[in-house]
Length: 304
Image (cartoon, rainbow, N blue to C red; front, side, top):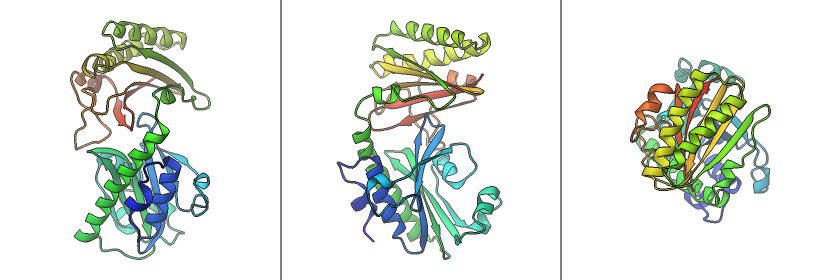
């Protein structure tokens, strides 16, 4: 089999080209009947997913078809992305942990699966999943090979993302999902601009009719994230507030690849702990970070 490094890491590849090459390589592994890749996006709230049976991956890059998976769905791939640890085994062994997922495989030829994180410099960018039509022993050698593929695919994905995300405003101008509202605010690299970000959030929440308690919590969390970006990362940032039914996601994005605001811990790659972020951890029920080729997005979710 040609390695994922050879097929999925062309420097000039964009993300669809990378995905197509990765799926072709992964589908060529012995016993694999279906392969899929999931990319962390949306402030860590979802995975952008495609698989070898979605479209015609043998034709051209435009044939890659994507869907979204909620990052908190109880399936092997989301567990891998949140934990940074591979999930391997027969469907019978996985049934107690993922009963609904295993039930959906009942009428397929899948016997066992491997879900593995795709990483770069300790950051989990997503994961890949292999569904086998014959039993696997998942011995030490095979586990090491699968882990290496995760690293190779992660490197290739990072290079592809550099082609897709050259400018920070690509993220800030991303359209809102159907039925949602979005507000964006640019913060210059000046500590005095933190107050302006707080005023922007309060004005936005007031326009949306958000209650005062939620507004106060969001203001405290936002102030911490913007301060980290402006003071510790020594750069400006962009604030993006997305209101969907029942929840509001507030995200702060800067251009740093290793900002003081987003130091990952190995036990949970979607969570962040940095200078002063204990406040965000205490106040927000869900939060985390997303590192891509051009910067870091730190986000928190509040009910509204």
